[in-house]
Length: 311
Image (cartoon, rainbow, N blue to C red; front, side):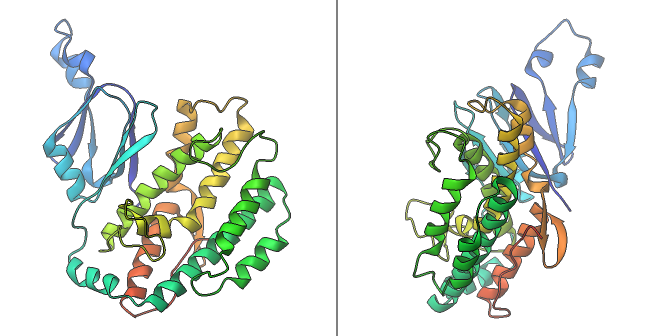
């Protein structure tokens, strides 16, 4: 089932009633001149079980403890945004699987050779997807990228991931003066940052559901990063965000600010079409297959992660 992504960008009261997220507008609640019937009609309710991601992007949003508890109980990712309307925080449930301790043990005890092989698969899938985007969106030369993907060895000792990234970003937006992929760089870095934050939440949520620790990565090891494994697993999915951002840039003259229509497009990342295991699937569902297959790799049942492709 595809879970909904909810975005709240205006003042709101968010509470829980009968397994439903209840949305009320402060200006309506506080207006004593409005008839009670009109107030009741303005209330919006959404089943908790339908929600996968909630994004809070206003300082005057009130969320009850009961609602947060129920959202986390249903493995929902809760994202908060800063004053610049960029995602800054992520809340996930502590327990998301019935045999979590066993799965943690398998993950923690995974051998170094296995993790190197998994990272090899991850880098190969990422470069192949980057090559597709560069070819179809920007018409760039990709023979070198295809060769790099084929040459990636266990653990990527030759650092083909970085080599491919430098070439990819140098050629994806050639008409944007001064562009380089940098979190604080010129647009469309702002769009990429926003899209990656949504993607990261989807991946982290799925890792928890699969009984894995998002903190313990197969390659990323930054001691200040609470989501190293999420950052590993999302790598082959990033090009799907890149393609969406490329389309947004092509359709808009001004990308200095992320407008509401742009946010609407980016919030649709969980339902982007991808190919996985020979079938077309919404991205959120595909991520679930990826994280489930990753656990089976840790447990020794299989040796290959299921990653997405464009074709």
